[in-house]
Image 1 (cartoon, one colour):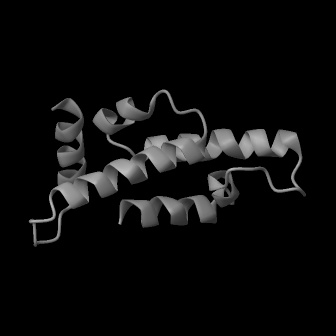
Image 2 (cartoon, helix red, strand yellow):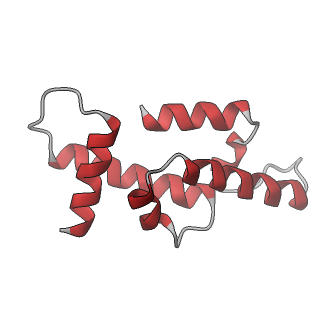
Length: 101
């Protein structure tokens, strides 16, 4: 759910290309740098401070996105015995605890 919401925001802001590994051929280097910064900022602003701390070393939106995706799926698989829907704050708390432990 979190990913869908953030991806929708990136699409509405015209920043979704920033999640690609390489710059679109028709885009200038200057424009690419701008959307990279704006997209990374948008993603980080959507994170709880405790989670944001764990992506400080990532510099591109793709790196941030990929790290969060890996952690999220790792947590879901690790806690697959939970049958009820997990709220986003609870999911991030589980993620935070997993990082600490």
